[in-house]
Image (cartoon, rainbow, N blue to C red; front, side, top):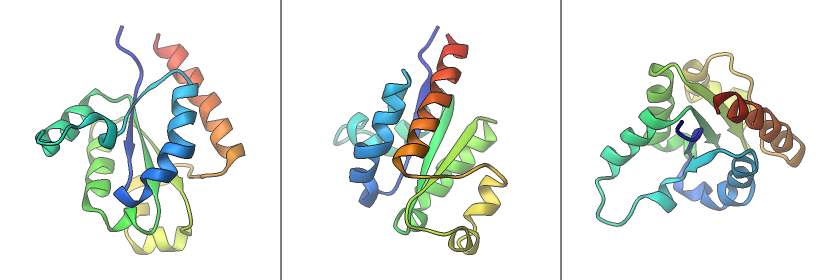
Length: 137
C-alpha cells in the first residue's frame, strides 16, 4: 500500500516556518510530506507537478499567514483538495479568523477546526496524524 501523503500548502515567504515547525510534525507521525521547494526541480512543469501531488495526497495541511493568503495557489490547492473530498487541516500563524473571513478563506474551508501553529497544537496534530497513518496502513 502507498504511504500516507500530506500536501503542504504555503506561501513561499513561509517556508522557514513550515520547515521548522510543520514539516517535523508530519514526518514524526510517519507520513510522507510533499513540499514543493524540496520536491520540484528547476525546469519542472510546476503546475502539472502540483496537480499530480494533490491527486496523490490523503490530506493537505494549509499554512495560513498574511503572506500565504495573497498567493493564488494556496486557494487553488485548498479547492483541489476539497474537490477530491480529502481532509484539509488549516494551520494559522499571525492571522485572526476575522482576517481569514475577510479574505474569503473561511468560505473555502468551512467549519474545519483550525490549528494555531504552537508547539502544543503541533504535538496534538502529529498524534492525530499518526493515528490516520496507522489506519491507512
